Image 1: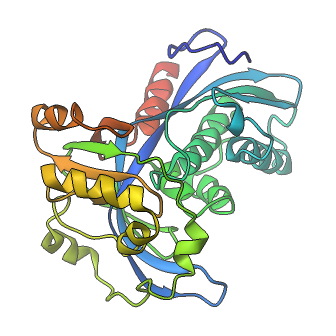
Image 2 (image 1 turned 180 degrees about the vertical axis):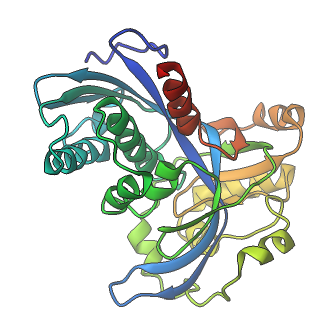
Length: 304
């Protein structure tokens, strides 16, 4: 599929599937497992902005993949890995095992930003191909495949803003106000393993229950256990965060990457500040139901 194909409208042969970003409104680490993974608690706020997949089903049993950014176009992209794993699952159930797909990834989200770009792309591939190939796998089955590819993938498969625990696999839908966010991406690629290996990272935060979330006054309160360490190691992240806090005291870092965000009740206030931002950034609205789920629901309605 040619990289110049930038249409965002479904056609007879091609469908467009959103891959929304997420924000961690807070991020705490409760403990560390023997295998090195960290048990966390967070609220994942889904956004109405992200990448997109353009998919054309084929009959040649192959997965052809390309991307608008050449550095992500390899066969090791999570989209390709997800497609192959899904195909294997379909073959084990003798369902449409001869089908393939031409997939083009329109990349807008920065890599390593902590906003779920790769995980969301992966989840969209699973959800979309499960529908297009008529495999009939359940959300739980898709989530299990996704978890084998990345801890954050299941939240995007399920497609709801949620309270997340474990390593990301324990997901409880949690409704949030659908307000506006300014997301800033300093020119820094945070090395996540380096941050996780830092002995100063707090790994024993007190666990909370879903009933405690209202006391956090999200999204205008909350903290990220990795933020201080990242700011110490990456001066550009600290510089951008200090600037953002001058305009919005509730600004903080999301996930384990370099992206920063600030919540706003009014889009007009956000746009004024965004116009002064010297770093790459985007404006998005928080949503409780993923654009991916809206897409899937619309297709199912239209098919009736």
